[in-house]
Length: 148
Length: 138
Image (cartoon, rainbow over all chains, first blue to last red; front, side, top):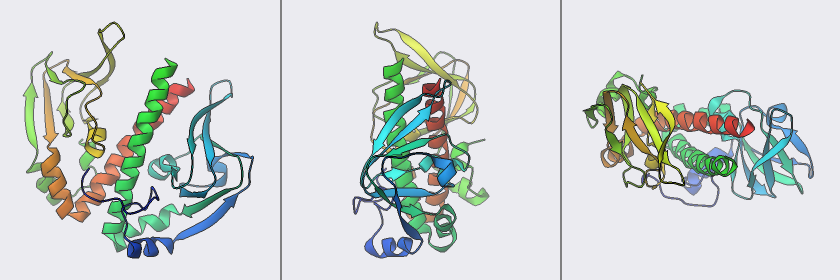
């Protein structure tokens, strides 16, 4: 969709100007997740979005016999956890870190405040989420096709 | 209910509707084919359509069926992709088309509408992703 132009490497804030990024950063929080752990998203977070600042992680689901199935790997600049952010519901997604994972966390309720206070910012953020969800839909559908 | 318009108020729906086109297709009509270059969003107002892919032997098979309120082509709207499947009417079907170029102009000029449309599209895409993950989970 040709409305906004990419300005930087952050998949969530990619359409924002420097000034707009500074505004969004007032509601972000830097976090470090220990290396070499497996965690379930909704036991650690609730509907928050994150962008990887340093490190990488891998997303898994569990099948009916509780085996872990790898879905995707994420690295610097990539967006995590659009599904719970958008659906606002429980998700059974698991994440494995390798080394320490440095993320920037964006609280759902703080981001959604921009719907009232700065619609251009939230429009650009939702457009970025559109892109990311589309790309994930394509990659995960391809994975399903390979499986069947 | 049109899922793309779910957050729009009455005035906003009128604005977007002013650029939409309505078409009625008889049964067994190909609306578009896999590989077509088109970025319009289609919403089924009434009727049933089959989503078709082609197997290794070149035969069409039905991936899914869509009906009233279902949205087609939202990924083509977001990313410049060719159509990934073919769409064929199973019954007489009324379809609302949201033309890409006109829609982009409208939401470029109406930031409040863009917020509501993008939010609705995020929900459609997230639901699709969740369904695909469920299929992988088995």
